[in-house]
Image 1 (tube, one colour):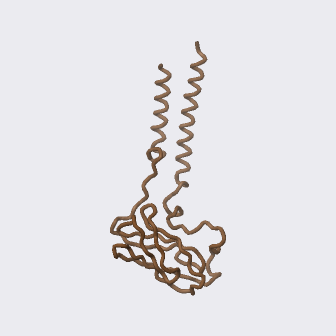
Image 2 (cartoon, one colour):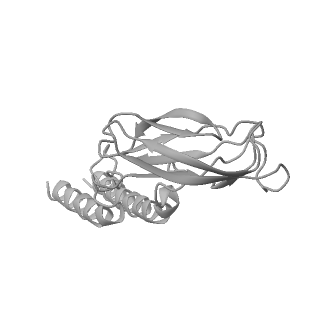
Length: 183
């Protein structure tokens, strides 16, 4: 009976040690994404300089980010930005026939609010990204590229936590095996 209590205490200690490393997020739960304040209305385009035929990422915010909004530009037309992780996002392609120049990108929220930014279109060959028909990492638009530290910032703490848990389970298993061999 004492060994069962000892194993339970050991596992509780291992779990308590691992919780701060894992950000104390309950199992199966994701940390809530950072949400902009309700009064912040904005639209961002990434990259802000692009060649015709390339994809751009749009990240926007209205007062109510649970419903789609419209973003328009002469560079890619009118598109609908969709709710995703507390923001409004889309990835339109700049029209192949768009001439070099600066183009306004305007957000029109369902509540009547607006915001705008600029997109610069340059001649082909002046931009260093591969054309959109070649595989690429894609724009860092908040779809994962800039949504925070991502998994890269969690690799060391999660690896350390798994090592601690594995060591604890190994000690518990070896104690159980050594206790079972005694008469």
